[in-house]
Length: 219
Image (tube, rainbow, N blue to C red; front, side, top):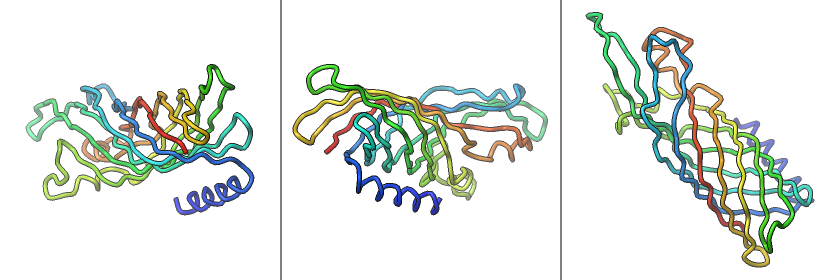
C-alpha cells in the first residue's frame, strides 16, 4: 500500500506540472449490498440493501482536453444484512442473520472521458476504473464487540473494487462546477474470512456491491 501511495503521489506531481487539475468535494449516498460465492447448503442470501454514505475529496488530472485521470480520497461505508444456515452442536439447522457495516478509506484510480458541450455550460462524463480500499471501522448487528472480540478483526484489511459510472457537469463560474452522476461499485475481493472459519470451508467468499448517487462541487 505504501508503494502504491508513493507512486500515486509521484504521478500526481508529474501531472500537476503539465496538466490542468480540478479538485472538488463529493457526497455519495450508496445503496449497498453483498454477493456470495458458497455452496447452496449454506443458503447465503442478501436480505436487503442498506443505504450507506460516502464522502471525500476528488481530483481530476486532465492529460488531454477531454480525458482525465481521476483519483482522490473517500470515506465510504459498505455492507448489508445477510442470512445463512448453520448447524448447532445438536445437529439442528437454523437460520442466522448478520447486518454487516464496514467503513473504508478509498483510493480511486479511474479514467474519466468527457464529451464536448451538449448544452450551454453542460458536459457529460463517463468513468471507469477501480479503487484500493483500507478498512477503518466495522460493526455487525450494530455491535463493535461480540463475545469479547472486536468485530473489526474479522474483516480483511484491504479490499479492491471496480467502478463504472457516468454523469453530467455544469459550469457555474469561471472555475466552479457542480456534478451529478451514478456509479456501480463491484467488489473484487473477499471482505472477511469469518464464514470460512465458521463453516470450515475455504471456498466461501463474501464481496461488496453497490450503486451510488454522486454529487459534488469542483473548483
